[in-house]
Each structure stands twice: as structure tokens, then as C-alpha cells.
Length: 599
Image 1: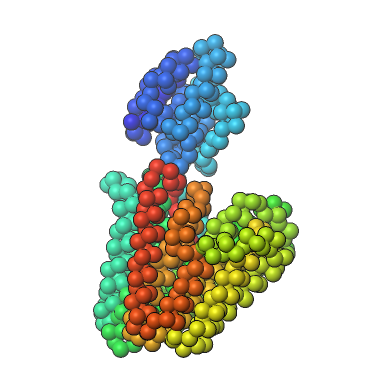
Image 2 (image 1 turned 180 degrees about the horizontal axis):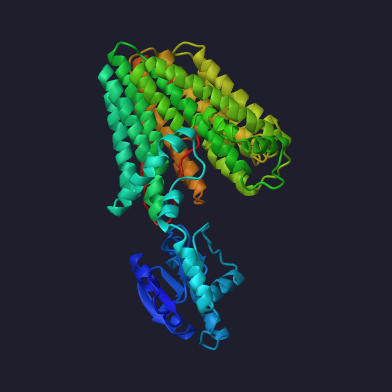
């Protein structure tokens, strides 16, 4: 149980101790710094501990934000500071410094908690200070200041602020105006009944899987039910994040579930639509796989661009300035958010089209919309990259190298190529190699050796592209080009096989590999580094898998190739899932709750 050490003389009429108990703290009282130091030493080492000034006046939610957020080892608001077990030593040193400086007593008018925060800052500790906005957190020095602070507390509805802050400040048009106005109340209802974000996330996944099952029936009633359930799943998907923010219930498991379930839900729904179409005599597996490939590549463009630029210096450009000016005009903000087809708009469109049309039409519209959105966002980012004079860091280059997912073949070949390629030649060569292998796979019949030749060219160009650190203006394009090449090759070869079941097997393989790539992204975002090198070696890297699939297509019959794709999909899925689950449920995983993807 976490411990809150209240320092100083209790203030008559103060609700501080009851507020701290309502937040789950065991409240201990210390008259001075020496007493606080003794209580701190006696507090269980495995629990959170907080030091709070007895004169504190403020909203309960201000205390909640400052003292209970699990994402930050050290956190503070005026008059209160807290440390999780990982930061207890830093807090102990700061308290000892304050005890020594004050001779063991707390001087009148001084706040021990604020003094501890000052000492932590002096030690170079990173102390999180939450944005309070209109919430009050203060340590008044006299009765008049206390009365003014209490009046300020009374003038602001603590619960209304908490409910509003549960909703993301930046979201899509559909989510902002058609979901969040009521989903926040669902989140509060869940919080008051003790439900966790993980439970809501799981409910969202189950709802989406049921929707996929309804779509798989191939009946009109099933399609209508699927559309309704898909929207319900999205509402729950918004609710889990709002619940996490409302209740400050962030967890390592929640990070993993939320990061992966969105993709699992959407891609399972694609599969359900394809199965439903097949029941009606229409084979749209190629469209379903194409939609998954396009959507995954869109996300990789987002991830790579953001990782390449989030800590770059001199990171400005005329294109970015124009974008900022457009965002200052109200209506353009929503138009620009909608045309990139974010998850809310995309799922709403899929749901309506499923209910009203056919799976084939649904996939056609989805592919056209996503292709336009991808072209729009990628073109804008290319312009920004070419017009800005950014100096990218070693961390950014490492993140792009991790996202590239290069395997043993590329690693072995790039060692003799230490100088690498100049400037814009890096993404150009990566694109050339990817185009060669996809074209060779798409333009030849099953059993041809030409795709193998294309894959060998791809292995060489992939090694050339990553031979030096990826710090060039457009080097962030390398990972999405690799994704498009690998996934596109699998799609083309499965389509050319011409046997029933080859495309569903390819769908499973791409889904398994895409999971690995999403898992890499979220580990990097959590500052936990990429998956271990042994995992990348075990599944061959993007170039190794691409070469393997082309060889299998060349030496096996179409039916055997279908079986080989299925076996490969299962093997990759088992390896990456076991490692991913091991990581995300371990103590070393980042305690965050993913905010969801803009696209």
C-alpha cells in the first residue's frame, strides 16, 4: 500500500488526509523533516511514497495527477511530491538534504515537499509536473491566502475537468463529434464499477471478432450486424484510453494490448469480409491482403517519419510553417484530419459500406481512400524533409535501423560496404530493389526463377541502403519501402499460385510479420529498444523472408507453396508472439497506455 507522509501541523477543517486515503494512501503524519525522514525509511521499499505539506489546498484530481500516475518515477505538484520504488533513493537523498539544511525541523512558512522537489532538481532528477490547467494546488502561507485558495477550488468543477481531460486533445472528426461526447461517460461508468482499461480493451477486441464472424456469414443481415458491431468496437476502443486517462490506470499489459489489438481487430475484420464474400462466390482475398499491406505501410511511414524527426535539431521548413498556418484556420484542421482517413473515419466508412454494399465495393473504396491518404501524407512529409535543414541524431538513425528489420543476409553484405550510398541515393536504391522483386513476382508465372533473381537483387540493394547510418533527408522512407517490398512480394506470389487457399495463407503470413513490425514500433516508442537481435535473426529479417518466399514459389508446386506459406505464417507468429508476450508482461516494459494511431 502506498504511503503518504503529511508534514507539518494539521490544519483545522482540512480534508487532505481523507483525500489521500481516498486515493489509496496510508497516511502518516510527521511534525518536521526529521520525522518525515524516519517515516520514509520505515515505508516499505516496494511501495510508492509521497510527501505532502499539511497546508495543501487543492482539488482532489490535482493530487491524483501529481501522486498516482504510474508512468513517472518522480512526480510533483505544489505542496506534494511522490516517488515510485525505482526513484526512492533519489527521494531519500533529497529528504536527507532538507533535514540537514533545516537542522531537522521544518521552518515556518517553508514547504518541505517543495524543498524536496528543489533538491531533486539540483540533483538532476527528472521530476514530472503534470499540467493542472484550471485545477488548484497550493500551499497558502496565511489564513487569507487559504481562504482565497479554497474559493478558487470551489469555483472549478473538479469532476468536469477530470472528465474533459479523459478525452485526447487531438483526434479525428468522427471520434471528436460522434464518439467522445458520450464515450467519456461510459469511461466514468466503468471507473466507478472498478473496470480496468485492459478489460474494456479486451471487450473491444471480442466485439470486433464477433463483427468479423458476422461478416463471414456472407448474409445481408450478417453484414448489417457486422457494421453495427464494428462501430460498437470502436466506441469501446475510445473508451479504454479515456478510462486510462480518467482513472490514471496505465500498465505494461495495457500498453501491449492497446498497441496490438487495433490492428488485430481491423485485419480480422478484413478476413471476415473476405470469408463472407467467398460464401457468396466472390473471391476478394487479394483485395483484403492489399488493404492490409497498404494500411500497414501507411503506419510505417508515420512511425519512420516521426522517429526520424522528433528529436532532430534545426527542425524547421517552409512546408511545416505553411501547415501550421493552415491549422490556425478552423475548418482546414478538420478537413486535413479527415482526408488522411484516420481510424475513426476509416472504421465508420467500412461499417457503413459493409452494411449497405458488398465486400468487394467496401475494399475498393477502402483501397482508393487509403491510397489517396497515403499519397497526401507521404508527399507532404517528403516536401518537409527536402526543405528543412534538420540534423538527425544517432538515436533517430538507430530507430530507423531497427524499423528496417534487416536480417543476417543484409548484415553480412553491408560490412564490406561501410561507406554506403550518398544522400538521396539511399531511399532510391531501396525503392529500386523493392520494385525489382515485386515486379519479377507479379509479372511472371508460378514456378519461375525470375522472382528469385529479383530477390537476390533486393538483398543486395537492402544491404546498400543500410550500409551507413540512416541520417539523410529521406532515409525515413527506407523502412516503409522494405515493408512494401516484402508484403507486395508475398501478395504477388500467392496471387500467381492460382490455387484456392494461397491468398488466405499469404494473409496470415503478412499479418504475423506485420505484428512483429508493430511490436518493434511500440517498443521503440516506450524507450525500451527494439526486439532482441536473436529474434530478428530467427525470422530472417525482411530480405531473408523475401528471398525464402521466392525460392519456395520457384521450387514447389502451387499446392505445396500454399502449405509452405501456411507453415511459415504459423512459425513466424509463434516466434514473435512468444517473445512479444514475454517482453510486455515483464517488469522492464514501459508503463504507458498507447494513445492510438492517427491513421
